[in-house]
Length: 227
Image 1: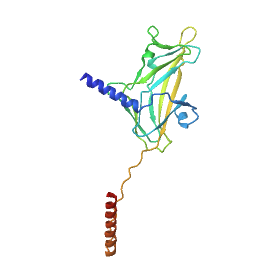
Image 2: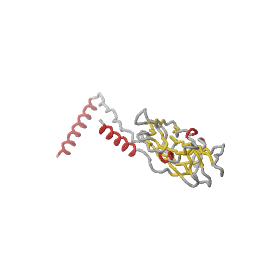
Image 3: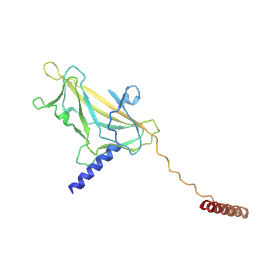
Image 4: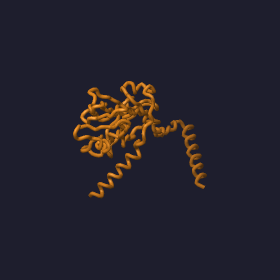
């Protein structure tokens, strides 16, 4: 039974890796699309085109501290990332099991935890991947009525941190940062060609003769092809 579970886990991971975006998204100006402003985005990325049935999993977010001061993070202040449906599209959370969370803090973030202060501290000039989606978890585009190029969804990554002063005391006012990844509608799949209902011959005798000739010609053509 254990071997079966391992095999299933590997297959599940492979499925989501093959249908998910793991590489970094392209950063763009937040003025490039009104949807960024509508969601009060601080930093903006494009996730590219998606089609109905696509999964977006193996998701991560990076906490960057490019200031000259240390910053601290309290887990109690954080809200988990979420996806916003746009353009009439519908997204759903898919998880390997109801018993697991969609998001989890990374081991790298936990390594920054200071037991005495009860916070995670990121030194000046450092970066860390602080949150990631669990294995088997993904956002799935369930339905997509939007034309090609229209906005269909946006992942919002919110992080709240505090700057630490020279005395090692974090500022009361928090620094709130929101990263946004926008997805647009891709080319829809080909519409299956439904064969037209065959037209029955007219009831007049001349039409019956024409239909018979057409049938004989068709039979002769098939016979010719078979030779």
